[in-house]
Image (cartoon, rainbow, N blue to C red; front, side):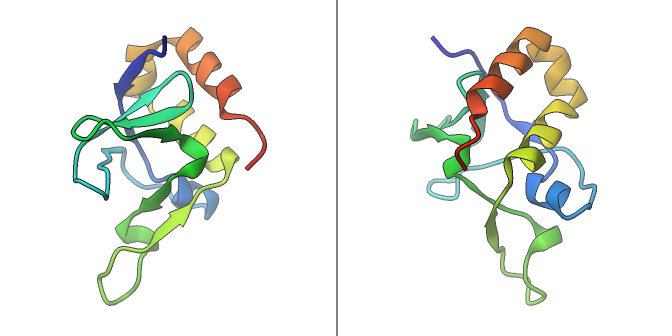
Length: 111
């Protein structure tokens, strides 16, 4: 059974573009619920229980969105997401190195 923790990372799309953004909680655009991240490399919504592999998600962030203020949702690369998760100090302290290694192994490389 997967072990989930509250998702609190910087924007992985911005990591891809060389930008460093603050670590923040993320919400499910479908219902607004907070997201959890599992060692099975899935995100799970706390409100509606939607659950899907991290490769299926897009990220909306003001730092990579349009100039008119609308949020633009973009896919991350595996490297961008791995960097965002592995450098999330508070989250990694809570989850532990073994959890992180399992997560990274379950990310896969078929993006």
